[in-house]
Length: 175
Image (tube, rainbow, N blue to C red):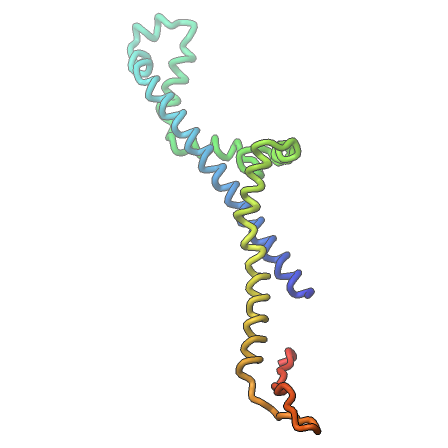
């Protein structure tokens, strides 16, 4: 029984660890994609301004706003992939897309997050219950096999001549 509880606890820990790591990875990929798309859209919309900032006449007409041109030029020199990786890692949260305290608050207040957690539990429950069910099935199958296939040790006849049910060999679990 202790071994079964240890196996269930180990399976639960493995499932929780894999789920937690998966949520973190999915959160990072989502943040990366969002940052990458936003930065490429920004640089694409700044193409006209980048071309105009190269013109000396336009640059001198923007006397007090030359920092805009400097920002556009520096954005054009940044790799969108590196920018997205940096933005994704800057927004890293240990519970995926939200802070862990926010996740606990959403679960405690109920609603859609609670339903999502119940669905997740329903999906993950077989990983907890399957080892238990398999162990029970194997024990039952072994018992049935022993009852059907074990050799008849002896038949005991009572003194009146009636037959008693046959006695089968019993296997111990110590093997």
